[in-house]
Image (cartoon, rainbow, N blue to C red):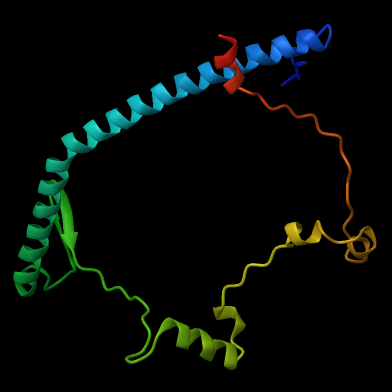
Length: 169
């Protein structure tokens, strides 16, 4: 895709720049109003959808619980040859599954300490990233010693004073 040059609004002088910034503040406020209105409408639509779906979710959960109860009570008859019952409108059954839990009278913290003590590092999740916020405080020499550098850039910024719009009006 070809790049297009950004549209640039021509500024004549400081007075014109001030007028432009006042208009920018008004436009910014209007965008915020539009987005706030939209978010309110979205929130209302989500709340309505949740309210309309709630009884269906409740009934679906109750029916699923009933199916699980039926399967549990009839386990010996239904699951003799296989662990799945295949019906016209779906299947249900039992799957053997496992989950990990700390041993009795132990905690995950104790498990972690034992893993460290036994030097079983493949079972310990560690995330390492350079701490750039700390490195920003370093001297250029120290940055260079670890293979990093400080790159200067003159970045344009602006701040709108929307409060002053009310005083102008």
